[in-house]
Amino acid sequence: MSSDQRAVYLFCPEGKDYDYDQMLQLAVLKTNDPSIAEVYADGWTDVPNDIDELISDLPKYSHVYLLTLEGLTEAHLKALVSEAAIKCALYNTEWISSANSNDFRALCTVINAREYYKELRSLNIRAGMKKTKKHVGSLPFGHTRLEDGTIQEIPEQIALARKVAEMYKAGFPVMQISIKTEGLLTPRQIYGLMNHWGVKRA
Figure 1 (cartoon, rainbow, N blue to C red):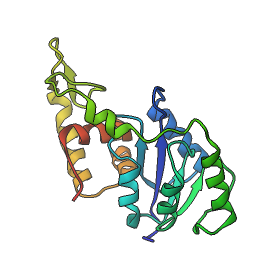
Figure 2 (cartoon, helix red, strand yellow; figure 1 turned 90 degrees about the vertical axis):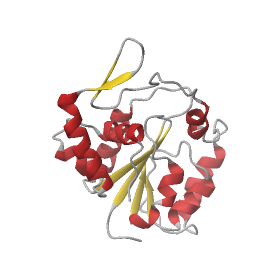
Figure 3 (tube, rainbow, N blue to C red; figure 1 turned 180 degrees about the vertical axis):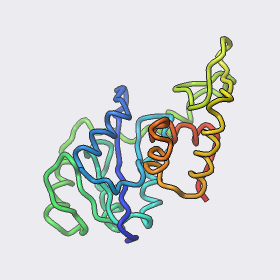
Figure 4 (tube, rainbow, N blue to C red; figure 1 turned 135 degrees about the vertical axis):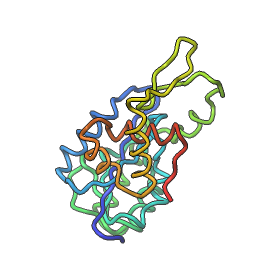
């Protein structure tokens, strides 16, 4: 496990239109933890940080909050708990750091009992979108949509957007970047902008 850096995972079921920012606010409220550094999510096409990326990034975190158990399999839970302590914000357990604990088995029972569970499909949704010059989905920060459906940068906002990209590439936690912009960019807007520009962390 790393130093005490924490992440949170959100999920939006296929066919639903959950508000990402409200879900994140709920997670922050439920966890009451100001040390959350990054947000990972499935179900929002403009937020690229999914469960697979969270598992890949686990060495960075000591603890991972799961807002719900939606979208997760027993295999996901085992992968998560192998590197970090986990806790479901809507399921009353202590921090779980072993796959052999009763609390871990209880979470698996909840997951396995869900008849409505479906395989993760956000990657397939993104991969299946037609390649077009028209921008699909939410507009990234600092951009406006033209009449022909293409998008154009807004000069007054793009300078801030580029500073955000530099902080992101430098490894600043997204929650911290959002605070540094004094709320002008939400975590979702930051992830969406980085996804649009293809910006990756080093």
